[in-house]
Length: 323
Image 1 (cartoon, rainbow, N blue to C red):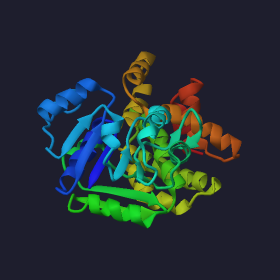
Image 2 (tube, rainbow, N blue to C red):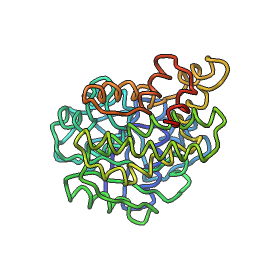
Image 3 (cartoon, one colour):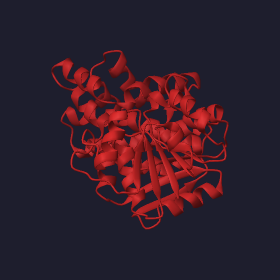
Image 4 (cartoon, helix red, strand yellow):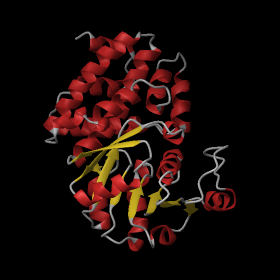
């Protein structure tokens, strides 16, 4: 199958390598960097992302939307969430609305306060949409660890295509119909991971993080329910699976940022935020606006917001656990 991945970061390259395990797949990655495209054409490497990794010959990289989309049978959208609207507008003129779009970009567009699936539908004028999420760090995918993804789509044909793409690639797919709920989980888990990092940075043991995660899962369940999505989505790979992983591993930039917030010097966290994409930071502001608008109780989320944006002491999160 001819596959296009929009975006050329660590996650995109790792997913391309995973798909390339199935020799029937031919993967084209779109990048905005002409230099990366030329480097890959000559060496099958992008040293700035994975220094020593030589990728399969059935993967190509281009900086042309026209080339990336002209023969594709399915598109994986994997750009950073802050660029998704501009990316969709740029690729729209080359897009055929019959081609499925699989959204791997996390959650909710912070600028427009809309689910990414709604932006795809509005800008590309298509209903052939799926959302994927699950416990998966790029480096683990690259190193052939077992991968499990929730695939949210209302189109049976799209799920069958996904099964064909990932056949014999050490990948487990479970179908969901809850596109919004899966995107909501992908947004929330990054915010709560900052909280886990804060608790770790304060020197709390694993038992405290377990208490925190128990409360997190209940709070996520309530938010999903109040926003009229399927609350059972919290039990999926996109919900429980991804949240446990992101809130327990220092490979998570959100978790690491939370740890750095507890440092004696405030510049430690500021410098990290300036140099890294911490999705939960902007997403926290977006979600607080949403939950206040809908009058939803989410005390942990509000506490994390107050630490991030109102300068409250990190120990306030510990106090919230005692209530």
